[in-house]
Figure 1 (tube, rainbow, N blue to C red):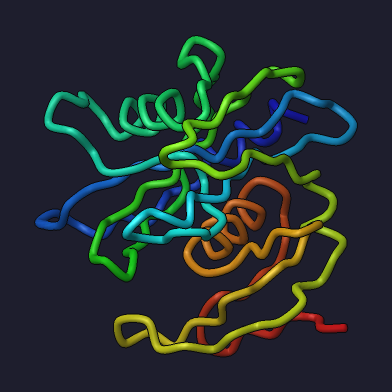
Figure 2: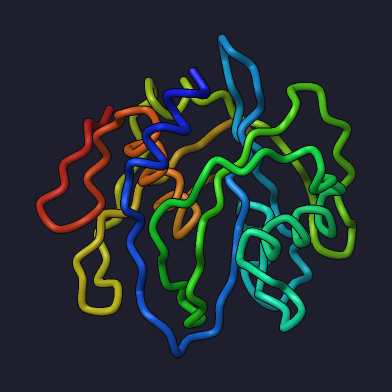
Length: 197
């Protein structure tokens, strides 16, 4: 399975949005479960000034010392949830996106061991949780929000998993990754149609 995911990511030409914006990197971390891989997500602390209380991938703004956005994503994942960089096998990237705060965000995809002990940094992260990949592939979004995002009509999926709402930029990055790596058919832009219950 993972060879196929890596092949698809390497074959894919990720969208790049040029230079001139502040950069951020996030980690789409998948567990190495051959039968039912999981994606690791966080819920940010409600006290944070940006994206407080929201579900997000581990990650954050690039520091001047970071040699790459891969290093940014790994450093932030270690700071936020205690994920050791040595435990991550980088598979590739998916397309860059712009956050509502103007950050240019690059999703970095990595494989991690199935049985990880992760410890959230309580100052930044309220919870760390895992969602099985088949949930996203087999469960239609609970709703779709159509919004104008920097001049592009976008269709933002929203999933509810246990007590968590997965929405916004995180859901868009997740849906695009699932399209690339698992052959999903989430249509995120004008003309998109999602199966709804």
